[in-house]
Amino acid sequence: MMFLEKISREMRERIVKGFLDIAIMAKLREGNPMSGYDVIAFVHEEFGILLSSGTVYSVLYSMERNGLVRGMWTKRKRVYKLTGRGEEIIKAVLNLIEEIQKTVKLLIGSK
Image 1: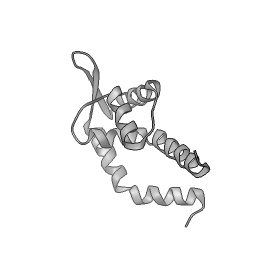
Image 2: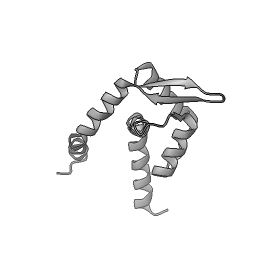
Image 3: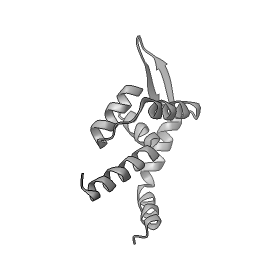
């Protein structure tokens, strides 16, 4: 792997892991409940990053404790849906996307 590709992949992985809760809420906003496995598959397909189940479930449990998602059991697995509070949060984040981009640019010294 070329040096720049390696750096790009590492940065993408750090960003995805840091914003995993936001990515999950954005995906759940489409209306389909997701299991932890579904989240792992989504992140892998969308970003080319394979997350551990421990990483995903710790984020999902934290989101559930904070009232952003609601977990429920189906016949074989636990799936998660976005709550009203989660919907409000993801809308606010999407409205702040330019502000977030500016912050990242300031962080790395790019104007």
